[in-house]
Image (cartoon, rainbow, N blue to C red; front, side, top):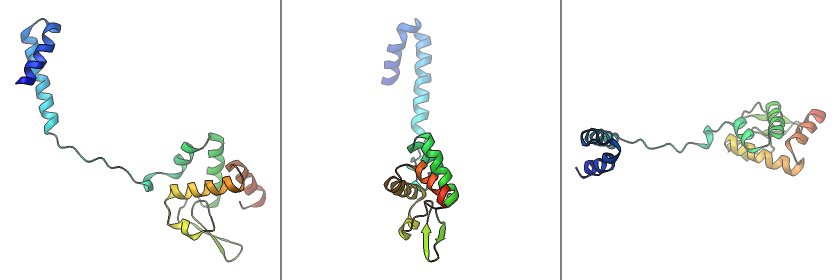
Length: 140
């Protein structure tokens, strides 16, 4: 009732009619009542596994560098985070970036991409330099 009076008080000068203000106040109270009676769902915070690697790469790198990295990882592992490659006979490479550390196989796709970018920055400086090296040598 108090809420209705507050709404009436605020609407009266604008409508010029107490009857119109009363109808508006009842409508507002009705909508508020309905909205308070609807149960709320808990928002899902999401999962790092739900993030796809290509959009992630595009979001963290400049466009040209992202394109080079996407091409490189497309050739290396086809973005399969469970990929295991065989290099030089007994040396295996793991995950999207095909790193030699077997612990990368247990990381999410985004974490694998981050580890690969760290490696590329350390060794080549940029993803485009790593991709150029891959084109000329067949490995990076």
